[in-house]
Image 1 (cartoon, rainbow, N blue to C red):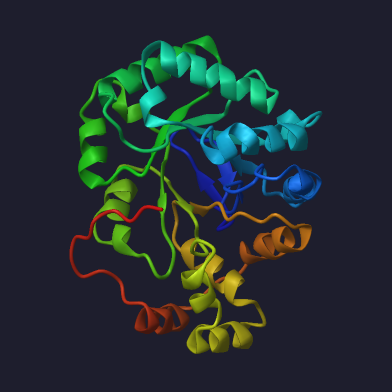
Image 2 (cartoon, rainbow, N blue to C red):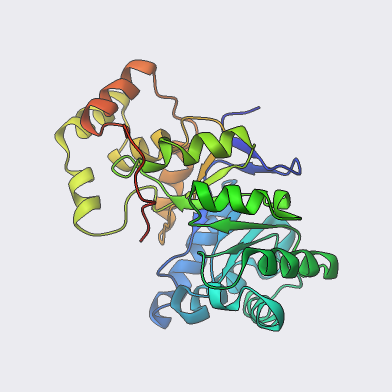
Length: 284
């Protein structure tokens, strides 16, 4: 399989880098630029778009809807449901709300955004109901740790889960200890959100890290491209960085073709060590 592709359990092939939309849709003045960025991403082959009913209180879904108007078949659309909406009639209404904002009749992959008080059994039942209705094509989860995934796996219908979307970047490697191996063993792809670290001090620190700057310079790439290439360096992991400008989208797309050597990966390990024990699941 091409390094630039990840295969879901139902054999759906997706690019290893997609388009995140967290913080999109918050200001009307940014909408046109955000739409252009998403469309540019699809044009370059980053056809996976990830959003959520939470983002900008539905605003990000509306931006996505504008971006995919007239080209729905070109896009693999992922959205997420609040945990308190992930059961019964609330889930059906939440799904219909997302469909309306997105301007489509189906979501390709609908995720439980994080675990709440609604039993996983109920969430699985309503997900399967929505699949039968054709409102979603498949479902998955987000921010579930190893014990949660094992619990899901033991539930009737739980093995239909297609993906686990979690925080993962060079400075947040806790999933490598047990969650990532579990997902690999059970052939559940991991979708890394905030693969460049969330905007703020941590991201600035990574961008300014002298060691990372040196490795990136030797490869003729940016530090952000280095970080993306590192996240998708192993099979079964895809990344969904947000890029609200056409330039950043093109830079992200180029990262899919960057192959790091074993020596380069070991050097990055010396800067940010892999976990040596179980760590609480990191979330933002």
